Image (cartoon, rainbow, N blue to C red):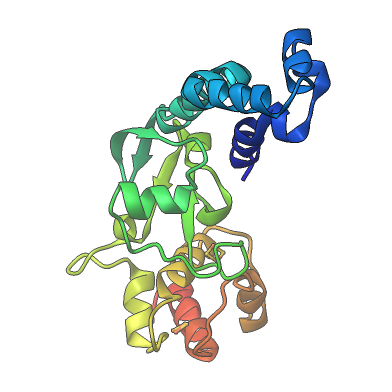
Length: 234
Ligand code: FES
Ligand code: FES
């Protein structure tokens, strides 16, 4: 609409708008001398056609590419505006070119193809995206990947794999601490971190320590039981 309006203005132009300040003295004179000469003027303009438009629209036609070029130039850096990043995940270095706006969560899932870390709320409210950064649990949806150059990141894939489960993973299975399983990787990542955090011995202490991890299936009693079992080394 923004470009269309000036175009329409340019086509209907000064003549339709009657913009005397853009008309030359000769044009004004011709327009007031009589119908035949008016026709002649119209004919002249008609013959001029595009030339008239160009004459009227130099600002428009000149402005279009001129304004488009900066836009392309502005978009190009955005499209090519990736930044180099080396991310260490699960003990492995990954060289990436990333849009600096990429969250750590999206980078893990989309760029590194590690889908074990889940996207729940994408707003830091559910804990499904919990990973470890330098040994501390972090909501990866709230952190930009580029902030983690040089950090040691661990995802659920790095905690344990079938055949080599982490004791916490084994405890979750043993205590049936999941139903749909969507929250489970985040729960386990938080629970593994709790093993090294100054958390009291009671179930309430565990609930408090794990409060950032939501389970919509309500598997909380079994989750707490699993965490406690792993803490006791059972
Ligand atoms: Fe990150 Fe919910 S997806 S906290
Ligand atoms: Fe379904 Fe937790 S097991 S959300």
